[in-house]
Length: 294
Image 1 (cartoon, rainbow, N blue to C red):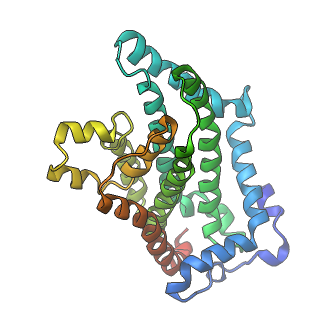
Image 2 (spheres, rainbow, N blue to C red):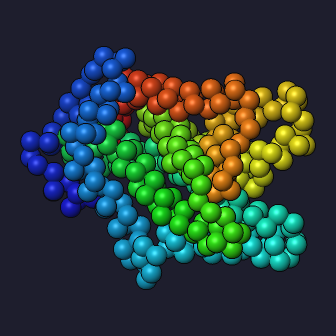
């Protein structure tokens, strides 16, 4: 951490925590965050590189773990479902792997953002750049890791005889939806976690439990088949903001378009935007005050 702080120009340091995050009009908070990130884009890039180096620099295989970890996971799924269970759908391990990668992106960003102020307390007390840059660096770091991990899907596509189609547009869109939803939710409660550390513990439990109630190990089509298209439980399940993007990721590799009800599409598209807007407003309104407790 010390090297990162020493690399910050003196005019970006401040002895006063009060001046770290100047007040801005609440409704302009989302735009202000984007302006701050653009202004400090080179610093943000360096922080992402630092995060990646800290994660992989001391590992013998280094950055290869971004590919090796999901590849090993895919091998386990293949043995379990194709060889041992003799599952009829040969694409099932690939679908699970896509779900794991997508859910991993969402969960890591959410947990990192919830804890961002506490985790970076040392730098916050010394450096005078905007507080949202810490969560943004964690978000982008995890986006890079998940994007590289997606390369492990290519061997599955060759094995299954799947060709890239126009449906691949859903993959980056789905990942952005997961990225923005997790960041927005995390920003809403990041300040509360400074005052009540139990918040971070609660969200770690939520992300563990959420793995099982999200279409990671199961599919949207299986839910429809078991519950029935007209079941009220479908509408309840679709309140989970990751159902649509995870399903989009799976269909993008298969070259098909998922059949969602229009109201579920509207909800899934609006949720990330609204989560980020409200998250930005709450974070900008509260973070300036709670940093004094760090």
